[in-house]
Image (cartoon, rainbow, N blue to C red; front, top):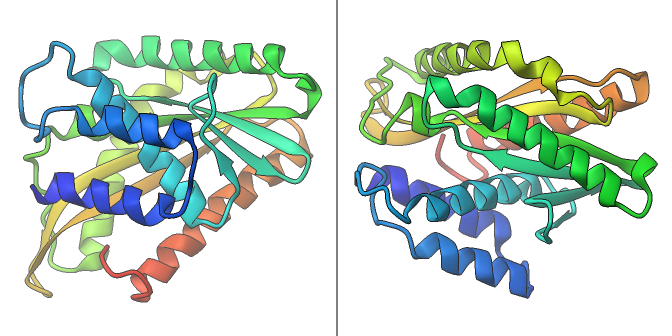
Length: 238
């Protein structure tokens, strides 16, 4: 229940005040899913979790004070100056499905570039969730303190990232500037005697030009600043 409620809290905090039919439709789809991630019923239940991940990513970008739009056909749009960044979100369920998920996401991004009124001003990022594959909602990442927990989740995240590496060159378009991997895990800590959920982001740069590399780095740095604020207690939680 903690694993589930933490995601809902993060979505609520990040998207609070955002209006529009698209956000309402997405929230309805999200709340229509099964209550617990450990619920093994599969038929018709993946859509809610997929939409939940899209909302979670959108909330994270908005919490970083970045202007976002939840408007099809992309899962999410982020505006940085005159540049529009399309995000496609994927949740691989197994090692065997990683390649297909990345290929599908990259293909969707290429469609976004072609369909946009000014294709030269559009860039793309593929957002991947490693949580379903690496953790069914019942796995604990134990640690003595926050630093120990950070090492544990980095180890799990790095293992997931390594599985995606053979498919990075499948982007096949220089406008796809990178990948962001998100991982959630239940994490009790011994020193604080607290049971919480940690969330880890890994940024993988694919940009070819210096301008695009700087754009991608600026996004990663804004996420890092958000994490630092949380650790300093502005929002609470890990």
